[in-house]
Length: 169
Image (tube, rainbow, N blue to C red; front, side, top):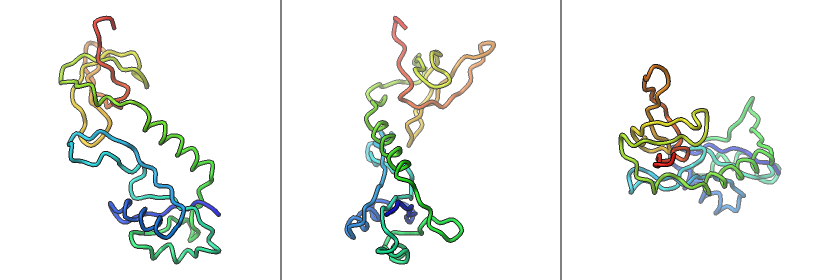
């Protein structure tokens, strides 16, 4: 038994997941919780849009049977051989997705344009900046950072690394 990658038809990951589950095929479909700008948007999005992982034995589940499952676009292959993903890679992805989903996000913080903030991680850790805008459909914000000669540079930063500046900071 090995892990293989299936590419779904566009925006059909959930449908393909249910089709695989119905056929009792072990499937790994990594998803992230997001805080969309539009409250009616999906709150869970695929970590790898259009891709799912299946754990099968190609001797008992022929490759051709995977191609004909509704929602499958193709089995990811290289040189006509299906790409095998190691258990170690799958476990690492599972751990990372779980970690990201547990991290608190900035959704409770209602920052408005012009608010002073502190960057708490990444290459700009410790820098003070000015909040500009939350980017639609992503977990990133645009900040204005003063770098050289009081020039403000726009930077896209993950919202979880941005904290409102308090009087003491």
